[in-house]
Image 1 (tube, rainbow, N blue to C red):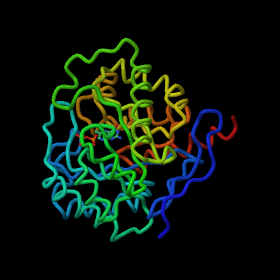
Image 2: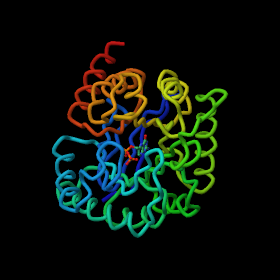
Image 3: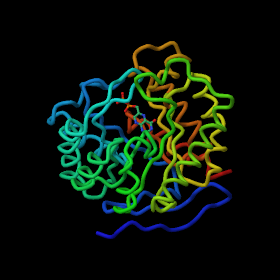
Image 4: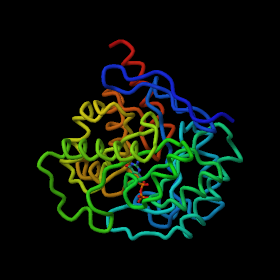
Length: 296
Ligand code: HH2
């Protein structure tokens, strides 16, 4: 098992390269990667309770591998608007068996741990996870940056305005894209100062985290400005409320076509990773977009 490695560089300002992990490569030189969501929670906004038991989570883990997820993102705390924090012991109880279940069926799929707490991330890495996906951009737990630096793992830094309990109470920005870009620039610098290798830092504008529908649409339309940060960009639009608002669809699981439209739009614009619930369908979308882009 090799340690993390990095090849290639930035073409224009858009990142292009390969990030090595202990369980396979995160190859960001080709088509956008599909990160499949595994929520081991009773209350996630679209699939809460579906995979909450250890058996259901293990079954879903095997399914995501079978469906060809490029990365599997395991989380034990819902961050939906209005959600309350879940402590580290409970998060670990939820996510560790799920990570072990993924590892039983695949040694080569990279796993990310979706948490803001360092003890959870540490236990997850020990159980076979490879990346840290922190929706607070290493901001909630001061030990997170040091952990990422010491373990030499890729990290996702996401923008959020406020915290889930209150973030959708009239979020306001002068210019949402400028604000998100400057926040991410700042958090990348802080992570680098803490010893994280810049080439292992992925950024994410945090669709739905303290943003109105117009803010989310603006961030998606102006993805090129996020790509100019020179870091890989991840986007998590899957089934989210802004899609429901545009389409007038209340049930999150019925928002798959709207999700596909967003995934196609950002795939054409050069996004590196999409975080989604419906892996087979979104794999088709990104593969088709990639084929179309080869002619440009
Ligand atoms: N969105 C959710 C959770 N984690 N991580 C990143 N990096 N980017 C995202 O957009 C993102 C995320 C929310 O979606 P979901 O996990 O389906 O719901 P819940 O938070 O209710 O579990």
